Length: 364
Image 1 (cartoon, helix red, strand yellow):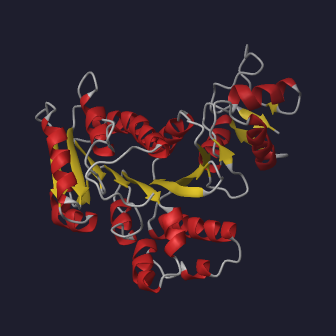
Image 2 (cartoon, rainbow, N blue to C red):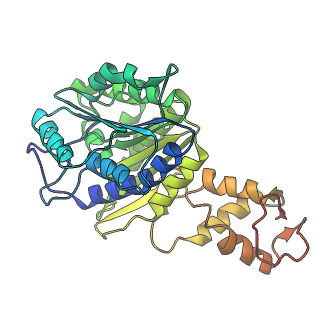
Image 3 (tube, helix red, strand yellow):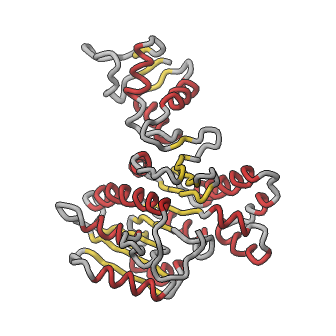
């Protein structure tokens, strides 16, 4: 969507879905880190907006804040929020939303208004360092286009342990202006490389789509240093890509929790939401997962091989769009019943079709 000019505007269905994913993920992320070994955690909203929409629906910064406030027992860590909104009127509206809430002493909220995400982070960066490293951070980077979200800043966040980014890659807007001579420098800053120029000459729309997608994913992996990167595609009713969501982390547990949030998204029918990490395996998130696809992926990966249950689960979580809850009863159990796999080190009394022991070895 084009950047709105109003202080508050109407919530679109695909934005509602994006915010639901954010809420579900933060419910897990905040508890894992706050009640773990980390005394401080940081949530960044680089393009925060006014905090609500025309119909009273909550915006992303208030969703994050309310999620943190809702835990019982309360979060134990010092929870820091950095909300950045370039439009001063929207920033003031956001402050008013925050003032309506009772904020506990262990919450530290900063609203930076009238400045860019890059300017605000540069100004505040030092106060979020612990032992020379950025405290555990989840950064939601949700621009209306491509300016204001330099890859150098994404890279700076990812360079720290336990730090993750969730980036809204506004493909429709980027694609529309990719040939514009005034945007060459901005695109190089956004991608962190001039390699995006190779995508301009793509003969077909889908080729350009994948070229830009794959470049940003590669940047998150190689330049950003993220161990795990998954992308999710939001398409409209005409099957045209609106945007990609990129999630980058080095935490396997974080990857599991993000997938859990993705698979629980409520679809309105006005858009199509899918995992787009692997161009050959576009997996649609829907209420009934396509287990035939997962079965084929597993059989292809482990054909004539022996693997532990733990190794199989790692493959499912890291290499496919599916969750760790999808493969045992839906894939391994029927495969064993069909005689297509064999368990080599089953414990005495084990029931056929059960795979609770991670060390159990399965021959395909």
